[in-house]
Image (cartoon, rainbow, N blue to C red):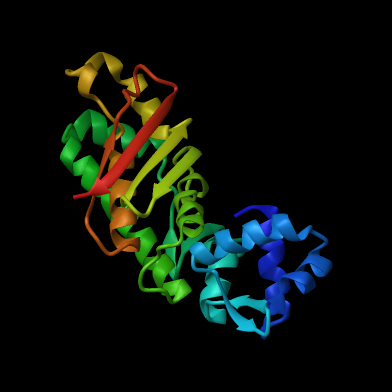
Length: 244
């Protein structure tokens, strides 16, 4: 959502009975032609509706206030569910004590366990946990807004797993592409490269599982996640998700 669209939403939040395009134009100081385009875009996305009054369209927010709070204050929900407790000096995930995974744990998983399916399933459990806690805190059963999903994906960064470079979400086709860099798991894989038997097929299995579990819970349908890049050959990792 761009700056103009956010200003439109904020103006309509202040005027729950709705505003005409002329009133909106004066309030947010945007010409009617540009404003009209953005209103239609927001209407197509389901944010706005309008009713005809005489010859004018009166625009209003089509969502109830609770859902709007979730959409526009998603960051607040995220900060509540995953935070640092200054008094106890540890991270808290929802109502649970939470410890960020140290790199040594991933090294042990890859070096001693050597079972990529198990590593993937551990990541998946983390994703399921994050998705479940978010839904509990937001009070929403199913997350379908692309902007909210993107914010939730970026919890990957807050948990110290790596950086999210880009998130592409196509709700119509129900598929996603996530580009990440500086992944802790990738560092582990590179450190143990000498003992990896099939270097051409190695992937960030923990991260695959994490995104798969996360989206499966948020959208309430099973997902399959596959990394299409090789962490030994690329600085960035691309994860593609689709229905399982």
